[in-house]
Length: 148
Image 1 (spheres, rainbow, N blue to C red):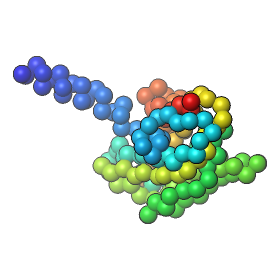
Image 2 (image 1 turned 30 degrees about the vertical axis):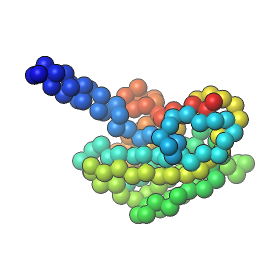
Image 3 (image 1 turned 180 degrees about the vertical axis):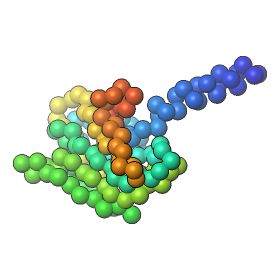
């Protein structure tokens, strides 16, 4: 019994950090969607430090067309558009306290071509530090959605 509890504790400690990062999934929680389909996506951002998150920046993958956003109480949203008028970046400013998380929902049309799309997220904390969930550091993976 002690061995089983020790193994479960080890597994929880080993795998918990890998699960607690900024992720983009479909509204139903999937990491895949159909090509050309309109989809509602949800960006989930947990606070992993003992201080508040004050800004979340999302880089929109090429080929996706964002069309609308769900209102997120307590947050101001700004968007940057590229030279053809498509949303390329979204920034939410507000406050996510320690031990809390926030969800930001938006609608997008998927690219026509199948393949993986990488959602890069930059999480800014109250002290100005930024955690880059962009895959540059393997410990800080970008969220991937497979378009089929």
